[in-house]
Image (cartoon, rainbow, N blue to C red; front, top):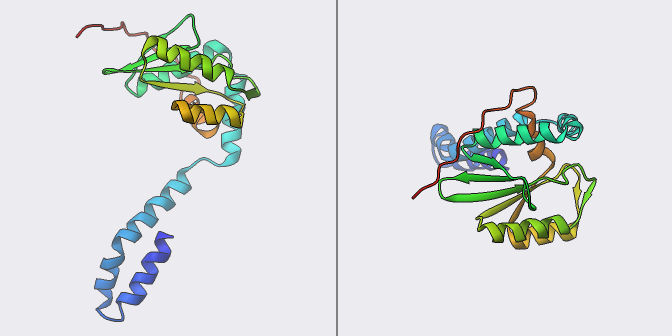
Length: 181
């Protein structure tokens, strides 16, 4: 659409001013069109995403946990693996606390119950955000619940990109948690 807008602007404006000014007037739309085109060309294909998701589904729990630990660590979070409750990880970045649940990540279909458990755990731990990781389908009822409770769903291409960047890498060392004011 940006490319079409740029062409229309150039065609219209050059009727009244020299062509160089018409191109200059359309420049913002040209830049947007180039950026969007580059993003689309660099995005993985559906086949690539499907292969990555199959690799994710083939991972053991420890492999997935290590991959998520590394991925969130690279994003600047301090990651703590939780042993109990509805959440598997607690991510801390500055004052902001996020809970991540992926206990049923291999389920072919996820309903509302694990999201309810995650929401209750978020309230119990006073976390600011919650993330639910799923490699399968999430029901429409669960999606609605997630939207209402502001629970971010990580699945599909986003999950494949998050986890596949770690494939074959060594687990990172756990950093000690820093508490204080």
